[in-house]
Structure formats: structure tokens, C-alpha cells
Image 1: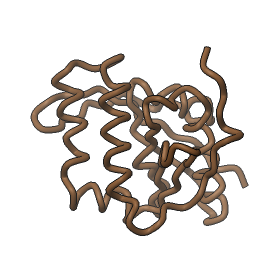
Image 2: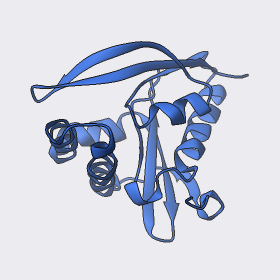
Image 3: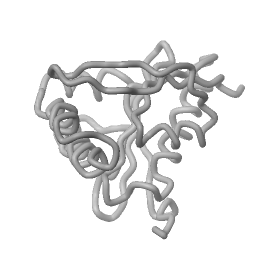
Image 4: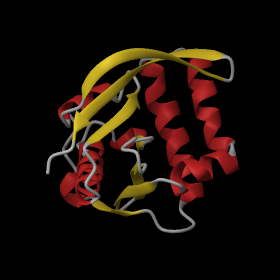
Length: 163
């Protein structure tokens, strides 16, 4: 069993200029964790988004984005949009399943509460669904999405924001 390393992890808002490191972290997460639930074609299509510099920069810079950092550098990130959408939750594959994703979602929930939001929602992958469920999100439905001509199943997850 992997040790919980969350006591050694700092959670903070993303700093300007970190988007390039986050694109590498994103690809690391997808390439490292994706094969446990997705085909090689799905993983390759998903990971390729990290190379779409302008789109990826918007993905992390337009929403409020929080990062997790330990002695090795950035190890995760999550985003929050003004409508309550959680567009991202990614943890570097070697730090997965150690509570980092849960800590990032906690920070998102706190930010949402401070903004007076009522509801959060996210599209969860097969490997992130359990993290969202632990944070109180419930699956509303399964969705089918397409990236670069490759189909994916994902879960629309939602939860109320505590006051």
C-alpha cells in the first residue's frame, strides 16, 4: 500500500508561467494512469491535448487553478470555473492514490464556498471517478465524448457546495 504523503504537500494557487510544467504533468498523469482503464489509442489521443499549447494554456489559466507541490515539484492541479465546473483534476502518476487529488478537491470546494456557489460539476474519467465520489460528488449520468476521433466514456459528477 502506498503511503499518504499529503502532510508533505503544499496546496496553492497556480503561479503565472507554470502552465508549461502543468502540461507535462497532465501528460505524465494521462500516460501513467490512463493505460489502467483505457486503450492505447484513447491514451494517446487524451495525452495529445498537453501539446496543444494555446488550448492547454486556456485550460489552466482561464479557470481559477490550484496546484499541489512537494519536494519534487508540482504534482497535481485542479481548476474551478465561474459556473461551478471543475474542468481539471490531475495528479502526477507517481503521486496518485495518496490523497493529493482529495486535497486539491478540498481547495476547490473551499474556493467555491467563498464565491457563494451552490453546485459543482465535473466530467470524471474512469480513474478519477472514485476521487470525486470520496469528495461527495455523485454520478448523474455516463457521457460519451470524442477526442481526435477516439471515443471515451466519462461520468458527469455533481455535488452541492456546503455553506
